[in-house]
Length: 434
Image (cartoon, rainbow, N blue to C red; front, side, top):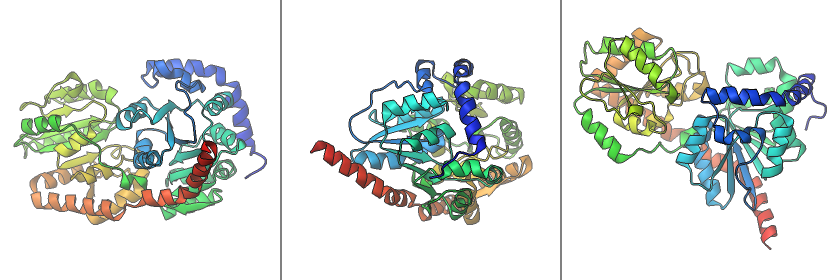
């Protein structure tokens, strides 16, 4: 473990400690923006809202929805071994997903703001036996304080994007002091592993991407059958997890495509459901008929664009449409996870900005399971081809499903790497029960 902290980390600890009182103002602002749950804002100061259960406790932390869902199968396997699991994250949407997708025994808390006293309060209460950090959400005080308590820490599904790597290289001592405190970093790919090692991780292994092994999201069958009946005979395209700046391009593409497919229905699922009303205004301004799912509207025959501004229904809409555009990729967000629609029989179209999932999209693109569109004109071309050519569409669906099957296995490799820690927990539990 590194000894002296680099100057930047020492300064961060001083500033974050002094700034702790200001987090009350930050919390109020975030509540107004809908980014905090006012009933649970105490968790942000390390005040637990649930008692700690007896026995060994595994703590998993992921930044938001994608990271939490990536660990879903791992959480289920840990629970099957009789282990208690605490999940922390930083967003309201991820908290809702934990409630929706996991049994009540899987506990969720919002991650405390990264001030030393809040982190200490959090760790004092929960006293985790093992900490698993998902992908790359690395908070300095959290890591340093946990390491000082000799808490075993493992980075799982580790990712270091092409965009982040050069930035961290410029602060190599700082990131090295954090990565060096992990027992082991389990990387998604060989490239990720090499980047972690170059930045100071002392032990690195390649286990693959857990997202390949995540179960497809569920769907309410009655709701699905109703939507299938309402859209029978229409071409349907789903634009999933869209971000600001993309809806305008999608609406322009929709209008051009309706010249060839007059009954086309485009379903837009905003990444942040609270944007539904704003997206609907864009649709109206474009001269198109719109309906919002949050208003309990349905996509009637005259509706050209359906805004699915609800939580936890992507599985429903992936099953509805044979063609899915993955958002966050026409703007420089880095793309959203395409594995779920690939598992549910969709041909996938995406923009050029997919640096959050470089390896995933590269594998799908090479196999013909996904197709890149550089902008509006190419988006119209790619969607139009898949809408018109059923054989090409089916070939793309089959190719995507094959890639998903071939690249799975990260869950078993991750569990194998964690086995020494899980065995130690079992021994401790057995000793406590004796």
